[in-house]
Image (cartoon, rainbow, N blue to C red; front, side, top):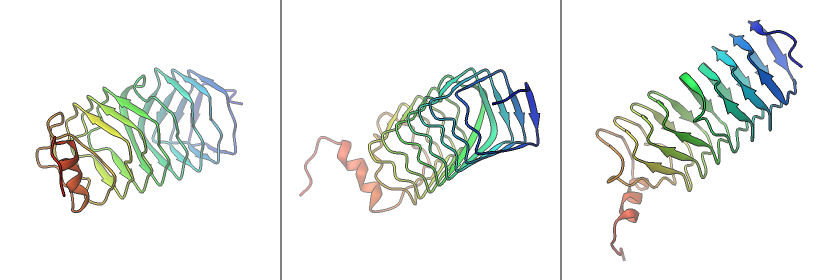
Length: 188
C-alpha cells in the first residue's frame, strides 16, 4: 500500500497494510487504518496520530514511535519491547489489552480512558506517568519505577509495593486498598 520510503504531513484514511519496512512517517495522520497482524519493521513514526485504527497482533521490530498519539484505537496483543528509542506515545480511549511493555523508558507516558487489561509492565521506568480513568484488570507491575506516577482515577490495579518503587505515587480510595491483597493476611 505504501509506495514511498518517506511521508510528511500526509493523511491516510482506511488504509490496510500487512507489512511496512523502513518507512519514515513524519507528522502523519492515520484514520480508520487496519494494520492488524502487520509486520512493522524498522519504521519511524514521528509526531503522528492514529485515530480509530486497529494495530492488534501487529509485530513491531526495531521501529521508533516518537511523540505519537493513539486515539480510539484497538491495540490488542502487542509487544512494544522490541521498539527502538525514543519511545514516546500516549493512549486516549484505546484498548491496549494483552500488551507487553518490558524494559521500556515510559517516563511521563499518558494512558487516558483506556482498557489496559492483562498487560505486563516489567522493569519499566514509569516515573511521572499518568493512568487517567483506566481499567488495569489483571495487569502486572513488576520491578518498575512508579515514582510520582498517578493512578488516582484508575481502577482494578494490583501493584506489589515490595517489588515496585512507589515513592510519591498517587492513588485514591477505595482502589488503593488493593495493596492489601498482596499481603499474606486475611481481611474480614
